[in-house]
Length: 138
Image (cartoon, rainbow, N blue to C red; front, side, top):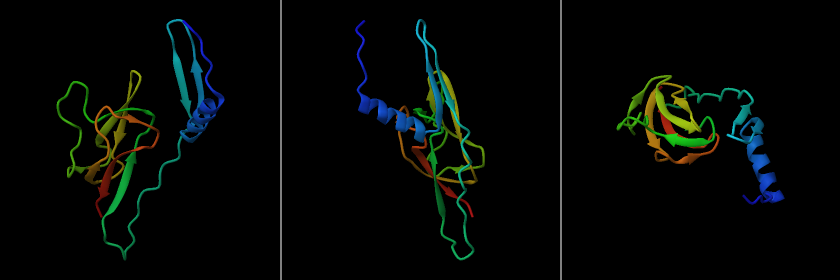
């Protein structure tokens, strides 16, 4: 197997992307392989707030919790977790992000209605990339 060097600009871009995603460390090994990613705890995102003068609906973009592959349904199911227009409650399962053998749930932060699905199932996603838009209930 031929070894090739990764160009320095590519390494720099990768390091910037890792830093933006909150990745603290990355450990790679050989011989039967093992990859370990360590992320810093992320502060909670501020929830959208309605002012008393503003009765228009507030929308919140829901992003991917980690880089990986978006799954809009369980691998053994034929039905998506949510559809556009569907009412959801706090902590309802909206999607999953597959990171290797790990499935990370994407949960609803509040009560609302799914306004738009931004990506199709099995799409690659980056950290905090928009998965769907949730219209929050007043």
